[in-house]
Length: 207
Image 1: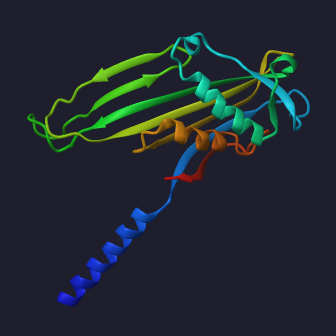
Image 2 (image 1 turned 45 degrees about the vertical axis):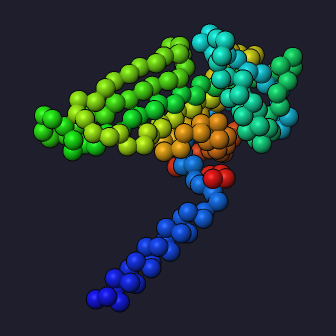
Image 3 (image 1 turned 60 degrees about the vertical axis):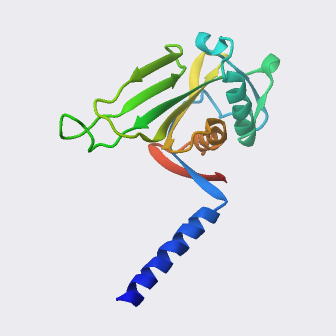
């Protein structure tokens, strides 16, 4: 029995050590994309420009950083940022929901307790901040982050949407600007003619 416990402990310690020494982490995104090109899809070097919603033009908006990341991702699929000669416009919306988690079994009313949540972000309805509070008590667990990114590409000649993609990701990592590049690469996987349906795409990034 002692030898069995020793073996189990050794395996658990090794797994913990290997996990702690990992130098990468995986950003897994659920991606759904649609294309509706009016003629041939864009060739490498096709120029585009960024378009912003009114809420994205506010002072202090993180849109500059988001579009900088998007420029790198779009360059990987052959698109070139060139506003004066743009053939397409690109609009990006990125939201992060921060969920404060509380123990489900701690509630003065019995049964399950409820968590508190904080939502921050911007989108077609403008920037917003919301709060909710736990019914029960207890010590909160580490927060959980739910991210939603969408990219819409519009043909400037017809003003019609030619490409649309959305990526969803959630996890315990709070460094949004480190996660967004992987989400954008996932969202553009298969561009300009992505396969139908929702796909789970995993991309490794440095830990």
